[in-house]
Amino acid sequence: MPERDEALNEYLQRLRREAGLTLTEVCERTKIQIRYVEALEAGRYGELPSNTHLRAFSLALVHACGGDSAHAGALVRQVLNAVQVQGLAPEPSLSSAPFLRPAEPAKVAKPAKAAKTAVPSKAKAAAPLPPLEIKEPEPERLKDAAAPVENPVQDASQRLKALPWQALVVLVGGGALLSLGLVWAVHAWKARVQSAASNSLVAPSTVAAVADLAAGHATAGDANTQANGAATDAAAGQTASAQAEAAPMTQIILRARRDCWLVLEIDGQRLPTITMKDGDKMSWGVRQKAVLLAGNIGALRVWWRGDNLGYLGELGSRGNGLVFEAGKSFRVDKAAALSLPPGVPE
Image (cartoon, one colour):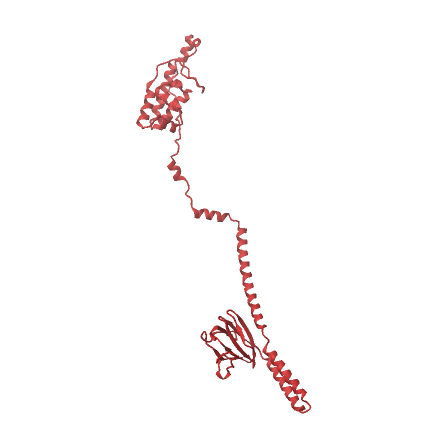
């Protein structure tokens, strides 16, 4: 074996120690096996796979320790030139055998051939080596800083954009149809309630017509004694009944917020005593005049001719003589007061 050139290995040792790095740290940075790093620093170049590995590993160590790549390249060329001057042939393969070994004996015995291979040309010795580019691993802190920051608002916006427009149209249209359906159902329910309340009692005009017809028959039955008078009375009764039926009807509506009793006299006909529960709502048709008697007038909200009159008294107080006349506003007339139902104290 030839004498070792200490210049390259000493330079590599000094660079690593000045950088404060251990052999393990250098291997982690350069990804070179530790046995090759130890061989370079010890000057055992024959343990390397090839001359190419010698040059590449040396420049990688210099770059990792912050040294001068040009100076390291010059030291590597010195080692290679020294090997060629001593008549050693480099091993280009990547086998595990060392590349710095004596030439074959038969070839050394020929002086002409040995002299030809021992003297290198100046052009070959002076040829510059291409620079070695080694990428250092990116620090973790730089990777973390370059990583995108999660933004929940932006993520929600991206998901909303991904939602098909057809689904949005279906949702909006379905909501609109549901709202229209609910409005229609409420109006229909109100109409049915008012119709049921209007038909719950017999119209006073029907009672008046029946009474007039009965009076006409009674008068006709007495035709033997008062023929002329009966005919006149019957004609007058029919005329009055026709006029009463031709008059328009006005609605009076009552809604209870407490349990209460009441009496109504509509167009001269007194209706039976009515008991209303909390939340009940009732209506009657009036052609001429209606008079109201209520045991708890403050419990009844009153509508007359479509106007909301509100509560016409205090809770617990009795109201009598409340007159609702067609074509006129509500008024209180004590002279029109109704008699109390049986069993009700004065």
